[in-house]
Image 1 (cartoon, rainbow, N blue to C red):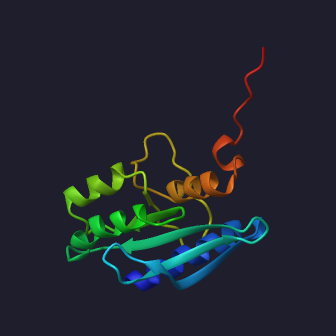
Image 2: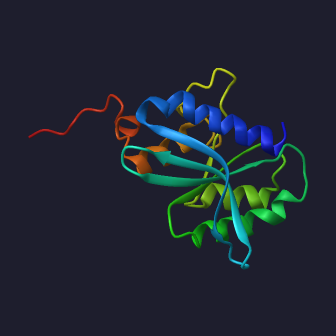
Length: 159
């Protein structure tokens, strides 16, 4: 899978899973300037039309060792500099151990690898941290207040 194919997969996943909640997905949007003064081009812009709230998503897929490792710290710094909420979604087995550790520990990154069916995949007990779609699902839940995604069947505390 290429980086562009991964970006399109993430966009299709969001539309299929959350389009009925009013989320729209826009591809390759220019938005402000980057931390080095260039015009910023973001992978995906997620808009909740009814509220006007948005989320920037940068998508990184790496299935073999390569130069993407060098781009991850810059991309995370550039997300921090945004004047709005942003996150990086990632997948693949080609990230170095150090970059993978950086991604796993970052408040701005979340793993996501949907299947062809594009259905949400929650984390189950014993699953590794980097699995399914649950991290992107939680990013969307926190940004757009989809609390049912994190609460599920949990019971309320009562007196």
